[in-house]
Image 1 (cartoon, rainbow, N blue to C red):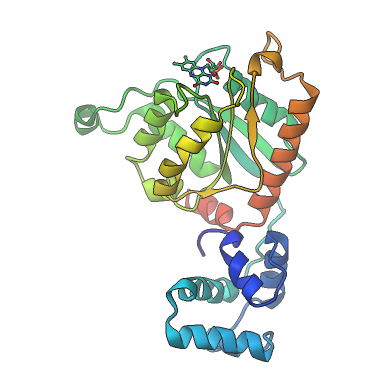
Image 2: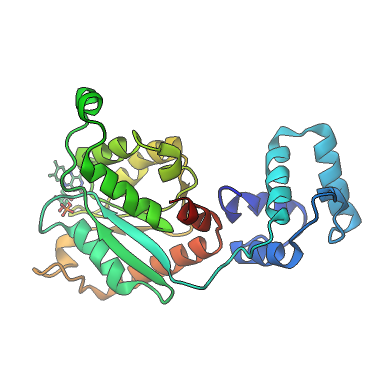
Length: 279
Ligand SMILES: Cc1cc2nc3c(=O)[nH]c(=O)nc-3n(C[C@H](O)[C@H](O)[C@H](O)COP(=O)(O)O)c2cc1C
């Protein structure tokens, strides 16, 4: 099982089925396990036109559909439920700023405090990670700080990147940390990793440019990015007090809404469990 329920969004629409993540999870839970000797198109739960659509696309080997049809077939063979609520979902909030008074680290802590029921948030930073240097990697291997961060990510169900913005782009410190991580079990760490992206800046646009600048990298790494909501905290200096506590009501509400959406996204996606068991 790979990726998440959002990949079935278009297929479910095409089949005339409700296609929210919750509806897809419900459908899978109701209809699995589909025995291995039953072809997907022959499954008893399709009506004639749905079965015809699947059969036809498979016969045509239609490139835009065949992969997702195979993935749906695979997902339906599984015996376990899509949504497991036996323990809270664990989110690792990774701040991309090193400074002690960082608004982004403060935002990560605010996410920890505001986490909805059923979600816990651990805050991590990039302290101790050296500048990437291929010679250092060759001679000393992956630095301890990178391995420690890797273990935290693998132990979490989801990753929340909390990014500053430098010169309309991604801060080098943050990109450097991600680059190091990509040098060690890149697929296990990133591929299909349920990921949220938020940020705080002192400017008026609240990391809009740096969040956009992250996209090619996150796409390259193959993360499963939450796009159902966004959080860009502008003029962060007005939202946090001197101790780093988020006091601005409006931002607190935005954060809370974002986290609730992110929680639903994680709940409706299965790879969190797969990553957790492979850690
Ligand atoms: C090198 C540098 C470039 C910056 N560029 C931007 C920028 O493009 N847009 C912006 O809103 N803020 C910019 N800032 C201000 C940051 O938003 C501010 O320093 C913020 O506090 C950084 O996040 P932190 O508090 O988590 O460290 C820049 C700051 C630095 C140090």
